[in-house]
Image 1 (cartoon, helix red, strand yellow):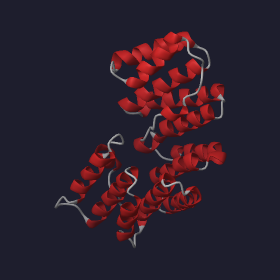
Image 2: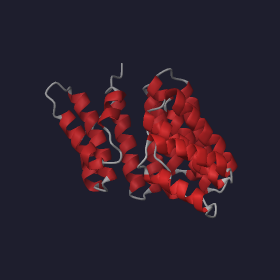
Image 3: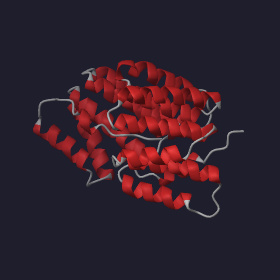
Image 4: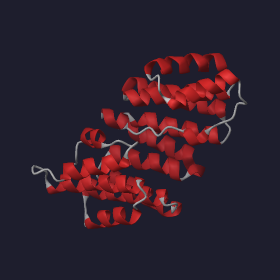
Length: 255
């Protein structure tokens, strides 16, 4: 059996808006006395990821190297995090190879969650094959009954939708973002539901369906009155600004 750290614990330690705090969270968790060596090592892979988000690539790489040799889920996580580091550093071809290898290794140990994680990263890192990787990720996800694995549908459809916005295919993007919205409502977190709704409203604005977009953004504003992205969308709608895709504000939705 390939035991690994409970994913819900990993999720609870992450704050993707604050990688410095996240790195500290994982360091503290790894230092707890009752941890097994396998748990400590997996927690360290996530600290490496948090270091990478701070662009401390050499430190992150050294940390991952210190965890080898590795087998099972730890081995897959090391491949994944090396891939994320390479992508963040702009070394895309290396990142793609590492993500592909992570898929192979995750399937070898029958770990759909980590396999879908790698496939969702491939859909981001390899945009020419984004549709293919997204479809493969959804297929892999459907092979599992695990709720956290099922939640990957939110990120897969969301990321594909924003890729289509970038390609000026807003009608197709709406289909994907509505699918992400549906997945978020059935299995997602509060943040995922919020950003899935925001994304649908955003693409409705781009499609000229302003009344629907205004209605959705006003509902979101009631939930989070100080949110700057909601305020920006409402300002654009009120001013009737030219309808242009703003792909640099695409929300990152993690499981």
